[in-house]
Image (tube, rainbow over all chains, first blue to last red):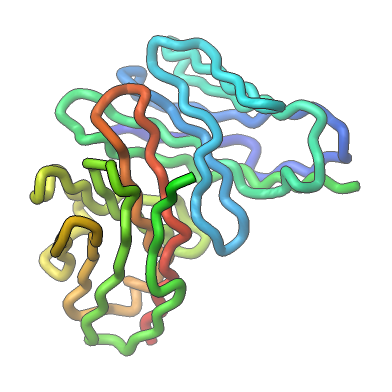
Length: 114
Length: 115
């Protein structure tokens, strides 16, 4: 059974800092991994998807990496801004006969202060 | 950009009542899902739906729950007799196709409060 863990649980940084959020998963037979952003009381916004065959994926100031052998993914945020404050979730998608069920981590609450 | 829409945004109901949560997935998507998030806990999978039938369900999705796609656009989750522990944010999601490149798109959720 896939377990996904995120550290740290919370992170507070000053504006402009580069930061890394960590995600680890137990089952390396992962199909893909998706990073989401969740604002308080809101839905999940997809940020990046990394396929199992990929090592990295980039979108603007965001860069996500995937290392299946070690069971880890990281989300790198460059030049953080107060608007980046949110909860960041990673979720692994199972392969095989599963129809794409995602297993989520508990999230990292990011606060970027001016 | 097309999005998944959910109604209502907040539903309050009494224990034992039936509720129906509604979702309109993105129009060309083929795979549909319900997830829920109890306050302070992880987002957890409930059920996936494809080709007008349930393709996978979690142990949470017991006989009290059912899903339906009554027409070409709506996707509903029904809870037959709500319990206090059903209070949670319920998210609908959809995906265009089966491939490894196909991300899940989530709606903004329905907050269900059972009193």
